[in-house]
Image 1 (cartoon, one colour):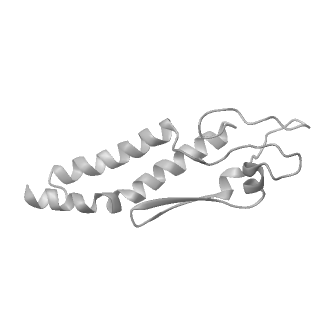
Image 2: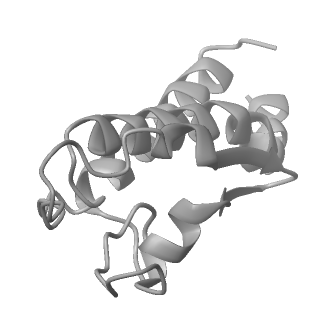
Image 3: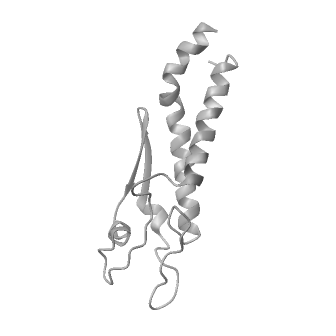
Length: 122
């Protein structure tokens, strides 16, 4: 039991790749549905059609140590900030807080690792 408790000290680092996968999946889902991470629909394009249809390719998610980094690049980053032509803001990644659905997915990934360690997994 003491060994299991000691291994909890490494829980964040061992869970980070699965948390990154959960974040990536959540972002891909919101992008595919044309919404920001909180579920608010993006403003429609003036000429019709799908806004930011290739945005998923511009999102990079990586676990580094105990943290998960999310980076947005290309023209999608300018749209995210409202700096693209037209000035329309279409949020792609979380800005000031983690959305509830994404947080729940992250908690599930961490809980899975916790249960694995406490069940005696290596």
